[in-house]
Image (cartoon, rainbow, N blue to C red; front, side):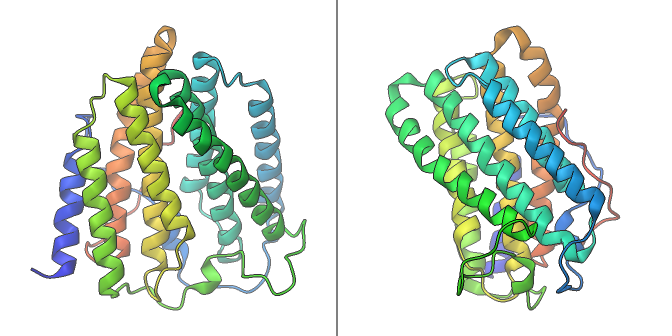
Length: 301
């Protein structure tokens, strides 16, 4: 059996392993599809820059007001951050602003990790030490992602001789044919699928453990250098894993914040669809599926 056929089967099985949410045949949009031609010019979209500045101000306010020892406060902050990140995932920008858009997504993914791990500490006290250690490491990671964003926005200067902070400038091909990369991605999908299908979604401890594993998996793809042609597949996988974190985090929030459970449950219906659709986009990015006409997925509200 070819590696490409294997990864298709794994993704299909992975999608089937998600909890039974309402499915949708709606085609979706991915910001990754915008990488048709790369532009060397810096992003000069004033409206986008203003919007990012406002959202980062709101992010600071959210963290300042969130009580990391209170499940209700943590859960609601997590919901707000997921909605903002998904807004940037759904956004269409010009090529020269694409790196900046991706950097914002990265910042919010890592910010959400902090809240998700704080929620795990509260809901799975048996393993609180492991989550607490992860939070400490995550704070440094979040700060690094913020530094990267300021460099891309032209607010800060990169270190002399440092590696490029943008991702799209490294893309030289849109055809992912690296057998080792595809095999590794297929293995990671299989591992995640097994983890999700084996998670008791009524157990906050079990959800927390799976959440931590999913965060680690996404960060692995944030950190690795993808082989030529597989960069778009890598970026799409990162967004797919981030949305899986949303799915698990919101499920955990619904169990922890029972007074507002209906609000999280309403969001979860769309989030289940969104996760499945983004994993389908991984297949498309890898050249293993044919894209359908695009329609933007609905962001978490």
